[in-house]
Image 1 (tube, rainbow, N blue to C red):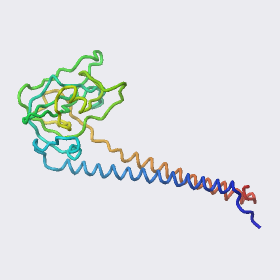
Image 2 (image 1 turned 90 degrees about the vertical axis):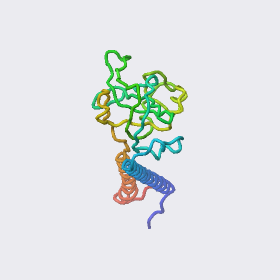
Image 3 (image 1 turned 90 degrees about the horizontal axis):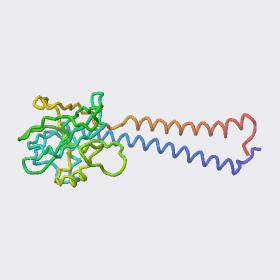
Image 4 (image 1 turned 60 degrees about the horizontal axis):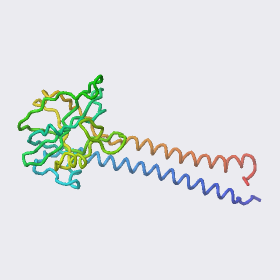
Length: 246
């Protein structure tokens, strides 16, 4: 006559079921995150194929800005060169240097922050700024819209000064007194802009879908391992020894 499972066996079974359920749920959550990011990438790709926005259609508030990310636009205005900032530790083409951002005063009188390009840094004189030929008159800039460049880790509160790690649109607007549009125009390379010495080999937006598949595989593998361990230690081994664990 077989012996009824003890309270310890029920506790082990319950713990195993909870652990398997939790790890499996985490695996499905990672798959869901991958699906969300894939949908985001699809939306961005579709926007990039849409006709260019008109300057008059540019978002005026932060809530309307995200739907214009990756859209192309051609604007005219004058550079506000005294408000230029250099974002440090930004790589391009295998080198580390600056992202150069300058507000552009549009024809309608509103300023738009432009990510103009990348410039090298003087490794020997780290406080030295690159010389940038910037037209003083009316210019035309073509590019695609997006948020501010990705943030790097920084110590302390929001930074100021010409050289900094990051820029926040709201903070920069308060700092400069400019009523900036809630978008950044990432300037794209054209033959007319090749004389300014800036590189514009922009990386594609990183959606990181594959890392979520990797995490999902790890969670599902752990869930499967827990099932296997339970079967081995609670069913197979006791039967091989001819006893039920007490």
